[in-house]
Length: 323
Image 1 (cartoon, rainbow, N blue to C red):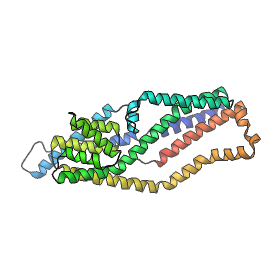
Image 2 (tube, rainbow, N blue to C red):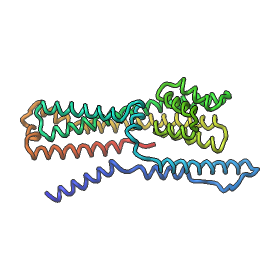
Image 3 (cartoon, rainbow, N blue to C red):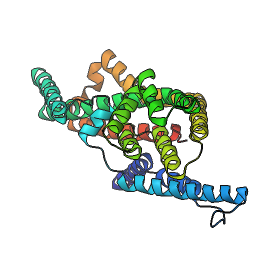
Image 4 (cartoon, rainbow, N blue to C red):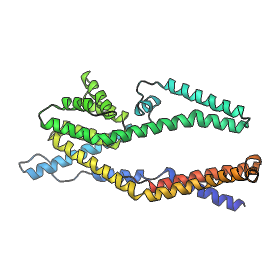
């Protein structure tokens, strides 16, 4: 029995390691491959091909520097930053913690009125008071990011058309802030308002990346930073970026379509055990009551929850594709 428990514990650790780690090394290798300097040109010459190669080398070096700075400054966002990312820029962390306290008191009151054990009361306070508000905040943040990504390529097209018509970059950004719906409009409005008070474009883009930490905003910031430092045709660069963003969107739809069957299978497999348990509890409650009344049943139930959680995380890791 001890040997069997040891094997199961080792498998659980392996599943947890697979679910929570992996993917960063591949991303770093891809970034390093993209940012690797190329070419042998050493200075400006009269040859257009050599000058283009030198410019590509300088751009690659800038990309590498930007990625290094982003990796060095990458840190866990504060609660105020999370509220801004979720679309509540005026809310304070104190308000959030007050809401968490009210939810915890409400959950504790329900558990006490239903005469639950001390362990159930503590778990309900922890889950409803800390877990549920954070989950809601993360859900709102992801929904806002998704909505931002859907309209971001259109915003870049507006900038491209404005620049080609002869308008300056600042005026093109103001047009996006006025015409594109939120959250794209609100983010560009904050960018333009900060530039009015003396903030540079580079600093404003960094604040925009902190408020909306998506890959698309990172691409936009890199393009604008490179164009401000090395010069060139801004409308052409942004047009290429808009095409890349649309290709990414099409790739996301293709991945979603190809992985829909695997996701449906994972949902069925994940919902089958609790569904069967609920049916058995409704039909023959005395048969399954020992899981809740006996200590051995409680341990078995806790083990099932742990294993089910690890299994769901492993399946989620297998069906989510990074691109």
